[in-house]
Image (cartoon, rainbow, N blue to C red):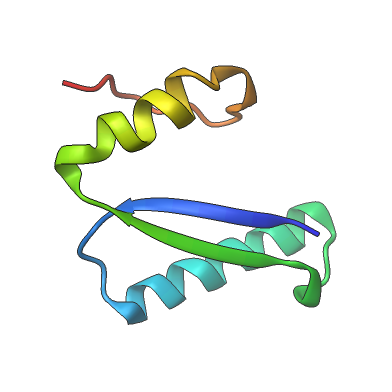
Length: 76
């Protein structure tokens, strides 16, 4: 039962969010062998000025051992 949480800079349209969610769900189904009914995807908007405190520090830097795709940037 994969559930994927995507955190993005705020500003994407609802259509873009649906497209992203569908593409991610398809990738999870293909790579994990999950059925469509088992996969869920949520998208959280994050203001760019809060990215470091709300995403980078708690989800990336503090949980580096869980990252399978690491970012190629360091916060400012």
